[in-house]
Image (cartoon, rainbow, N blue to C red; front, side, top):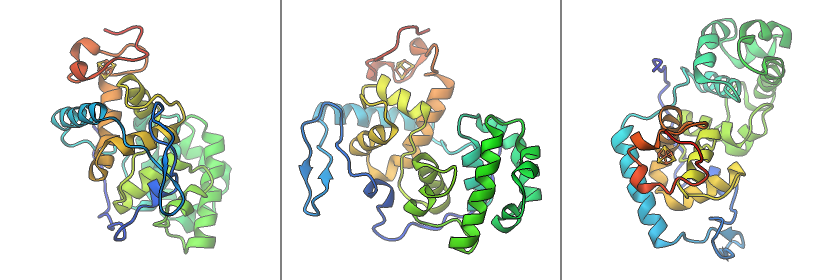
Length: 261
Ligand code: SF4
């Protein structure tokens, strides 16, 4: 596992609920129509007790298996984390970590990156998938950071989502790892495992996120995200999950699994 360079996390503001508040959507696929909160927003329906108990057992098993689960992206500032996360879309963390040291030396902050051309940046990230589009987004993103946020990565979910190349997943990764927000970033691993384990029936990552939020305690959301990613990479891989060796096997209905080892 690559050595992670981290910056001390600034705590989320008291009562911060930005990531989940931004999407008050119906909860589990099979849940009844959601009730209305006092604010008039759709409140997620509470999942059935049996499912909540199984989720608690899954969380305990993941804590045993991956007690130190954390992001494998290497970064030392929120800016570096944001750039690395944008680069990691449809690419491996290993490939991103191989490219970012030279990239960060050349462009250590938003101001330096905003003055680059996409062609300049391409030279540093050519080994990463979709590098042309990502180079364009990174330069535009840096320009917006300078223009709107004094060159800093905003500690605000809506502001990060609005950056070029950043979406909901990126915002959740950045806010949780850099600023300590409770968040579940749903990538391909998290979505696949949630469906196989019967924790969500959705393919839309936003819906999966809400289903998982309803099942797990907020203070374990960040851990859950990282643990599911590790489990997806090491055991429950996309093509042939290793169900016979999986420590979660007794808790997992193995939905959609057609070819396991
Ligand atoms: S039992 Fe199989 S499908 Fe379920 S989590 Fe483990 S590897 Fe994945």
